[in-house]
Image (cartoon, rainbow, N blue to C red; front, side, top):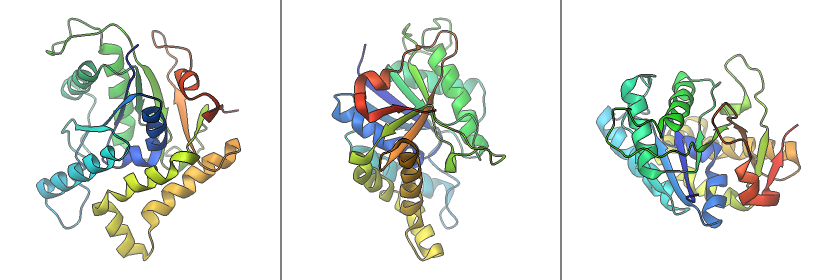
Amino acid sequence: MQKTVLSLLAHPDDAEFVCAGTLSLLKKAGWEVHIATMTPGDKGSAEHTREEISRIRKKEAANAARLPGATYHCLELEDIYILYNRESINRATSLIREIRPSIVFTSSPADYMIDHEITALITQTACFSAGIKNLEISETPFEFIPYLYYCDPMEGKDKLGNPVNPSIYVDITSEIQVKEQMLACHESQRNWLLSHHKMDEYLLSMKRFSGQRGSETGVTYAEGFRQHLGHGYPQDNILKSILGEAVHTGK
């Protein structure tokens, strides 16, 4: 098995909120780490053009990824218009074939924003399609379907306000500093909230939620996940095998 992990989420800074601590732990365990986004965050500004903010946010994401020793990729789709179609599936599958990850993290299938929900569907299909030879993309297929984990939705709830409970918790207490440093790299998003709220809400909200997940499993900070266990996908919890006592099972 290749010791490579991929986080494929919707926007720059998504990984920092929901799985950066776990990625840092995997890096320390000897895994190669890749952080990818569907879009460059091209709608994420009230002052810059799409082109300007895309350049800024991709640079911020690359800087953040370098902190734990990861590599950043962008599929160059468009905010708000992440669609479940041929183009998006092919781009995601091409990336997975290129990187050949054994573990993939993606967005929650139930979340406050449709970009996140569609990203989950695209990534699910891309993992399954990695070995389909007749898919019309140039990258060489590989037969292994990666382990697929869904990250927490924003604030741990779906769009109706119902709680989304993890089945797996990862203790990231030792990694909270690097997670915070990674999130702070996204200055274009952080500074707007800092100006608006007069406090560093961007970082505080991340630490509050990480603390909430930690309290649910008896540690200081944690990240929550659910494993995709559909037909054809790996059924054992590889995170437990790699990270040992840092991984706790939810109720």
